[in-house]
Length: 201
Image (cartoon, rainbow, N blue to C red; front, side):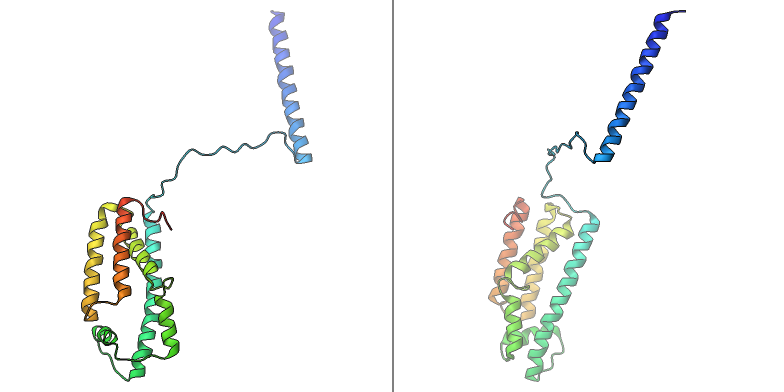
């Protein structure tokens, strides 16, 4: 029998048990004091997040639903303003096209409250103002496309068609705010296609 082998096994067991005891004492000490000499180290990630990351289908659906609900609420508010205006005139409007032509004619008056609400709604920072309206139109287009800029031209054509139909329903050239919104939408579509939309927001 080799005595060196027995000696080596005994030494290994001694040091192994000794290290285990030292580690246990260190853990027990940390538990009592709540302090560890080891510190957490923050390492900054080198991964860059793409600002044009495509949202998931669920995110796009949620955004579209939110935009539709918001638009519906604001549309009801607008129709309330129009209803008050028309009711004050004693005119009955049977079709939506007639309502818009009636409004375009300018042959009506409004009370102070209705006028104040309308002015607030179309103010520069108002819901129907140029910036918010053009942002909503483009956000809706981006959500519909899933962020795919190759679909921008198709969506822009749809916007232009809708604008033409709105002009026809109005019965004459749309008000200046609508023209400014149209121009802002064209600029924002171009920025989206170039990858610069939202950089100044």
